[in-house]
Length: 488
Image 1: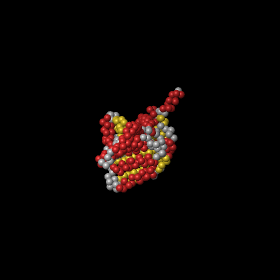
Image 2: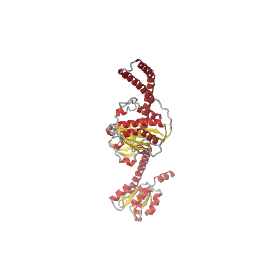
Image 3: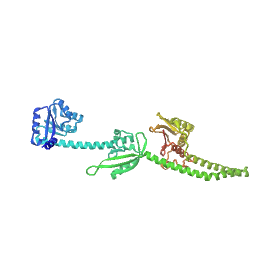
Image 4: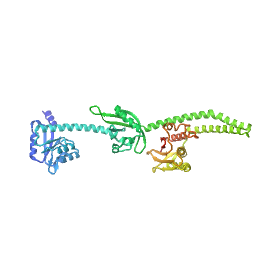
């Protein structure tokens, strides 16, 4: 018997009626007292002032709320109850069938809406039990939603939800950090602004629509600060009950640092190979070249130096012997690891000093120089002379790439983050096509008729020795931008 009473106690539904008319209370009590509602226990308060403290105690399973409560309404009660954190279902009672009140109550979260005078014991009991079941389902859904929302929000991966045009519908904090936009800004952002190449966005949309998903699609994204990030994008559709795409969700993974590390490794291997070739050439060529030079000098003593043809040909041989020797020396210098004398230096000051070395060229060619120096702390461990050499190669190339009288050279420094700083050099010259851009740092590759093609190789070697990196953006007929990154 004790177990039976315990079971009945557990199944008892505790109801609070908020009603200022005692007759209505008595009628409701009679309905609750019916046999089919034996498990329902009814409590009563007759005013807004008594109802709020009672609700705040959270001791009832369901609330029956009269619409008219003196100067207040049942909707006022529902609003205040939710503000207090009450999640028990509330059923609104009114003396008239008013669709406006019905909609307002349901929109605010009321579980049901009953018209006095049309309620019988069976309808009341069914409404109460339905409200409890609905509240239980909603609580379970809210729990699951909260669990997945927490997973969504705290994920290290950048996760987003989008429509079929890939316009953002939602995004987690990792997306905000990656792209630099707030969630609110992303909701109104045209995704075309994020892609460095619009063809990548078109291909992404096509594949998602055609196949319902795409995995590890590589694209270059531009964040709010105009910095480019190489990312892998995976998108898949979430279908409705009949199998049509309802919305899309995706993950973005930033692989910029990984790609940069791969490129640095490839460049280091190239420089290493160049060094090996240079040392081999120096060994195999310099000795016979030295003999050739000595033989030429001996030959000059034996030949008729008054003959202009003899003098011309010996001069040609001498100049080319010297050029071959200079090429070997330059190749050795450009490819061997640098011994750095790193000291705490003001990066801005190094850049300004290097600009002084090309200022005469800029003036002679009637070009404009625009500078912007970081106001942040730009002190770093650098080899002053080596950094100036690396930057000078970039500046000279930029000046030579621009048209006289129309060139604009832009130089700015900035701190990327607490660990890295950067100098950016931009020109409005003829630009570099993609095929040539890929080979810029290869030894002996040059677009200049008189160049040896080792300047940028040397620059890359100096930056690698500093554990830095270099980026190049270029558009044909629009100009080129070099960014040289150094660790602090």
